[in-house]
Amino acid sequence: MSRPGFRSSRALVGAVAFASLAATAACGGPSAEAPAEGTRAHPVTVSFWAWTKGSQQVADEFNRTHDTIKVKFEEIPSGGLGGYPKITNALKAGIAPDVLSIEYPSLAQFVSQGSLKDISAYMTPDVKKKFLPQTIELTTMGDRNWAVPSDAAPQIFYYRKDLFAKYGVEPPKTWADFRTAARQVEKAA
Image (cartoon, rainbow, N blue to C red; front, top):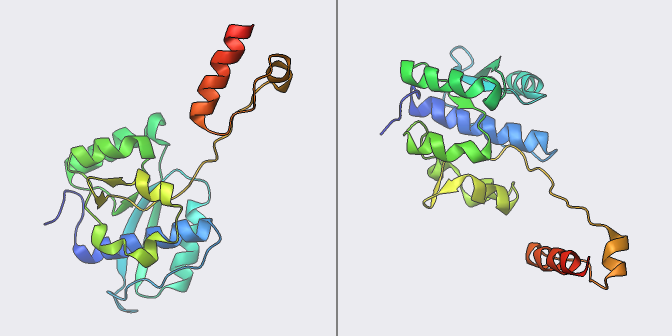
């Protein structure tokens, strides 16, 4: 079963291979060989839309090192700055790219619209172990994989050591501890 915007399973395989390479290359990890669905004379072309810095260089490197799959990259505005309307319009017109960038919080919207294809069959344990488990969770809905993770943003928080020391509150180690500590400091102040 195909979804709107995907021209063939062959392109999807190439898209998953490219996305896996792009993500692992961006993380400095080893790259996987792309499935050889095309030939040197007639390579499969995979269209890729993204706004992420360095995407063009990753696509160029992929093209340089793969003879049977070629990536045609197009830079688009980031999601909230015009990328999502462009993607939505392309999906409606049946001219969506094979691979595109979608931020984790927006993934559910595209899945619920039927715009993305279930790629679980391609997300083997060997592929998944190249990514942080938390990023795999962000791209999994209903026990199905809908995207290949492309980044992981570090999360940090700051607290005022002087206030915690003044009120005898232990520094938090978990988010639950942080909530409790914040309430303790608020009460004491």
